[in-house]
Figure 1 (spheres, helix red, strand yellow):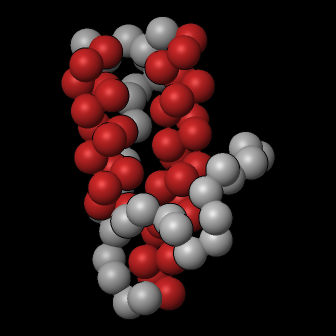
Figure 2 (cartoon, one colour):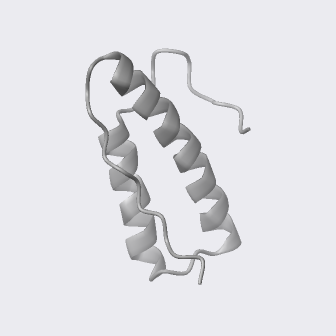
Length: 70
C-alpha cells in the first residue's frame, strides 16, 4: 500500500482522479513507461480512497480506465 501524502479530509473526488487517470492513458498512447505506471498505481490508490469517501457522502463514482494486460 502506498502512503497517502494528503491530509485526511483532503481527498480529491473520484471523478477528478478518474479524469487524471484517463488523461495519463491518453498521453501514453496505451503504453505506460515505468514512471507513468508508478503514477497510475498511485492514482488507483487515490481513486479507491475517493470512491470510499464519495460513497460515504452518498455520491456515485466513475470506474477508472484499466488497460488490457494483453
